[in-house]
Length: 193
Ligand code: GLN
Image (cartoon, rainbow, N blue to C red):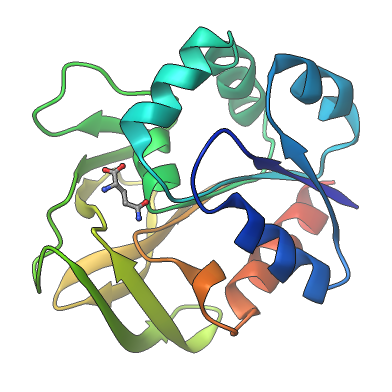
């Protein structure tokens, strides 16, 4: 099994380390060539945290937005953390444009209720257990469509969700040493392949 990690910007190296710990091979996707070269043997794709506007711009500039969107719509399992979640969202409050726009939810950037900066907490995540959660200027998922399953909430806000082949968190599971959420994603990838 091989997992692609979008490596345009942000916290991609940390995801590679977690996959390494789980004994799962990963490959950095830096441009369209990388994506096309590996697409047929990718079991899943991780979209890391970072800056969604920058990543969206780079995805467009490198003509990767449409091929990645189509792969996701065709069932490629994808795991978006923080900015990666924003990339997947169908609607972003106060922005005219979404990016990949494949997941039926509305998000608000830089809007996490407890504080606008960073914080750490622990909460129950459905199918995974009690897990540590590191928030860094994370988005709020304001609403989700009927096919989206809510996996975790903190302060009554949705912080993890899944719609079919798409898993998202508004926190950074790759910045803690708990690998269970990545294991959950690997299991999703196994089911789909
Ligand atoms: N604030 C960032 C954005 O809006 C997301 C933060 C993160 O990925 N840690 O894209």
